[in-house]
Length: 334
Image (cartoon, rainbow, N blue to C red):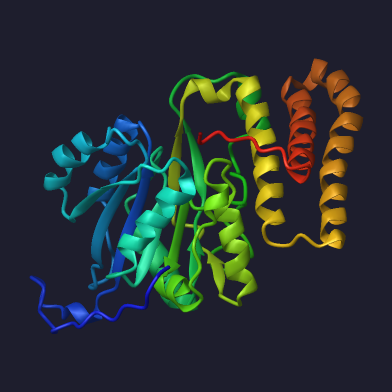
């Protein structure tokens, strides 16, 4: 899908006197679907990015709107001209997050050294991109991932914060900077453009409506031998509305993540032996949750409701994994 692209650079000087050939070229890719306020907030934060070294990157932003009606166009047209960096607006009418991701990459790969993904409900800290680029250079990494921290928009029940249910996003555990990783997600990640062009890899569009396309992608990238490291100070904050701290929403999320994980792994390897391992993992989650539930229910009377929720999350994650193995697809992006 993606063709290798070599950009001829004429060695033009920037206002600060730096040769453009020395500057890394990065494209920030934002996928959006009917979140105008979140998109506006994110674009404003990108405008306030800071860079510590003399080489400010040659930066561009592409927004891919997965709403066929183009609901994000007004935000891009009103905010875009005020930003320090150019904003490209594209629509991807085919419903599904993988379609939108591939559309962003198809645009960005032509003129960038690095492709950076961040979600439209997130806000980066000012030094976010500077840190991703610094770690990439220090470790000569093909993929650099950073942490995602929760920012609650509304007051949340005490059991939610005590349980830490949003402290570590799925496939985004916390490490020290430079720690090698095997898996990450796309809420906060920098990818060397060559990863896409050298092995002609893209996000699996069969997972467009279920999610899990990023897990599938990074598993293939790691298997191909590319280096992936963690950048502990490249921080972004996910804005979480009160509706997402509801117990039922959290349980559905656990089911969805388990389901998407099984489906994404199934497309990578369908051998019987691997299928048995997946059944054991999904069944193990389910049994673990069921066994813990009575004990957690008892201790919750003293220590809090979050213990019950943790056991139920294991149950729902396990059921979602087993459902995915059975071919049942939960499609939140439909």
